[in-house]
Image (cartoon, rainbow, N blue to C red; front, side, top):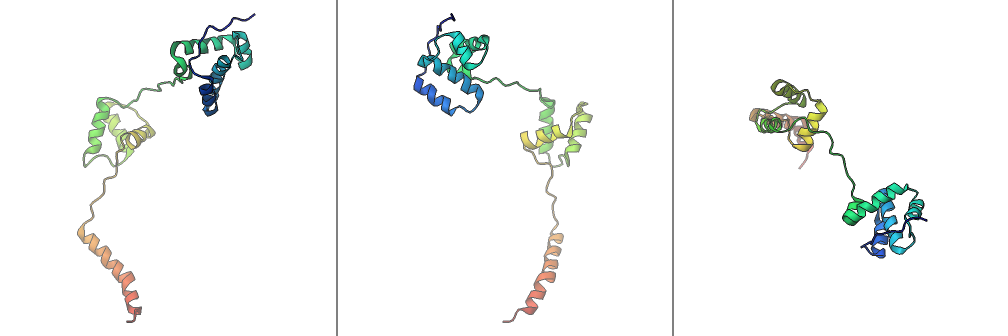
Length: 173
């Protein structure tokens, strides 16, 4: 005979049922289903619950232990790996930000890769620099080039000669 539960579920059966319907992942559904079965009395023994879930007894024990420690929030908590540490951080990142703010700045991401190699002896991929500058720092590399007033006037006069003069010739009042 399996061991009986020594666990009090604090959530109501109705709340667990609604949560189960709203659950999007199998991860959440399994755990909520387990609690609902215990709360409604459909599973009264550890071994029976293990069989109903199709999980090993040690897995069910671990889930129940998590629930005892921190309730529903702890049971449904999904741990994510922290990922790799950024290559460009600290002083290096702050210097890059300052240089990007300068009017001269950088003209390309490749130029930033070269600058990091020269200044900090750091080999970084183009894609890494692009993601940092474009998405995280949200900096713009291309500085708008000033247009001289003479070039502006020349473009307007060319437009007038090319498009407006023939139109005015056909226009009758």
